[in-house]
Image 1: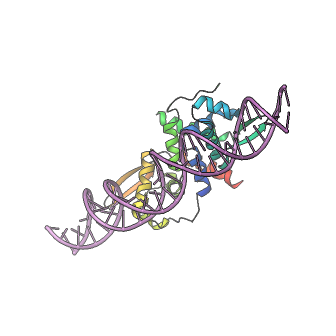
Image 2: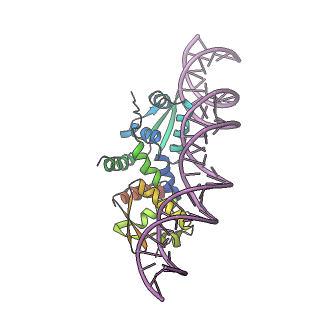
Image 3: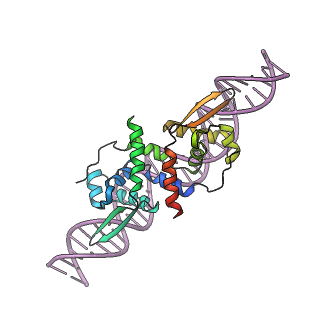
Length: 97
Length: 97
DNA sequence: TCGTTATTTAGTAATATAACATAATATTGC
DNA sequence: GCAATATTATGTTATATTACTAAATAACGA
């Protein structure tokens, strides 16, 4: 018999939700293998407003997926745990089938 | 230099998005190891309306995560690829740290 | 066939998200 | 300190999501 506990998967769902947007998923991929990138690089590549990218980065940060680090005038972002890329690749592989 | 291709991560993001809701994530977990469950079991456990669960199941089905199979009056659901559970466990583990 | 049970579909209202413009903040170089 | 640059915060509007009610469909048993 199945039992659903209130708030049972809330925090985990938050992580998946954060990855559930094309731009955010792409950003995470760019941070593969410990690569760091600043906000302006994402803005240039994606072609949306600065504020929009910043908003997406905040979602990823709140979900605990990325961290940031200010150096000079620029804010650099990096993946917290590169293992998340295995997961994304696993999904991507299934899509190609 | 980063390059964002239009529609690049759209389909994959759809999968993450589908997992990005506590009830849906819980449902997927109940289907671990090839277990099958019918809609009414989910309804009883979660305590929301039938239509709401049905709607969530449709989201998971559209994302390609689960499949269904009608036997008698009941509709049974199962995981398409149990590998998705490794992924969920990976995220869950990080949350516990 | 008729009613009952299991489920999906359609329509609706409240809430959340996405993308934007603009204002505010922080760091650097002058 | 002041201007320029990089970024975040705030407020707004359009769109999407969630959970609901009620109606429709499908399978079964009397």
